[in-house]
Amino acid sequence: MTELLDHKIARAETRVFKAVFPNTTNHYDTLFGGTTLHMMDEVAFITATRFSRLKMVTVSSDKVDFTHPIPGGSLVELIGSVVRVGNTSLQVRVDLYVEQMYSEERHKAVSGLFTFVAIDQDKRPVRILQEHGAPSNSILNNG
Ligand SMILES: CCCCCCCCCCCCCCCC(=O)SCCNC(=O)CCNC(=O)[C@H](O)C(C)(C)COP(=O)(O)OP(=O)(O)OC[C@H]1O[C@@H](n2cnc3c(N)ncnc32)[C@H](O)[C@@H]1OP(=O)(O)O
Image (tube, helix red, strand yellow):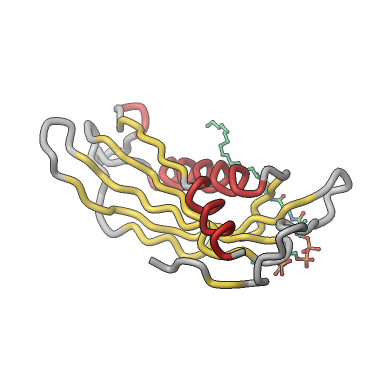
């Protein structure tokens, strides 16, 4: 059961690259905070959907730490990973890495947690893992 869950989690990991072009930067020539959150929410949503293959809605976004600025003209990689599976909810961590275009330099700049709930046609919460019964609220990966 754990193996199956680990496999589903690994398959759902979602990586997206973007270039930080001038239309996304502020007057400090760094990526807008709101744009960063938008990108992270989107990657979290894709990760949650790829894990569950159900309709997912955001119910909560936890603390997001912006530890380094994201300069214009750099590349960013966003990595979404499922870190907790509950009954009808799951939690996704999104880490954002900054890469220079013309060197191998790379570091983590932002990290955040997003919780999604699976819903049915009537927008009511539904179980995420019905047949294989993952342990409820199990912490899977806090990395
Ligand atoms: C500039 C260009 C723009 C372009 C644009 C592109 C867009 C690029 C962005 C893409 C991003 C896509 C993202 C799409 C997804 C939305 O956007 S969804 C829209 C925002 N979200 C919503 O509208 C959801 C509104 N909330 C609700 O409908 C209800 O609260 C819900 C989610 C159905 C839950 O209903 P409820 O009665 O509260 O359910 P309840 O049984 O109490 O709890 C269900 C589960 O949620 C958990 N839960 C409830 N509240 C919380 C909480 N606050 N915190 C944590 N867990 C909670 C419970 O613990 C429970 O978990 P389990 O133990 O079952 O695992």
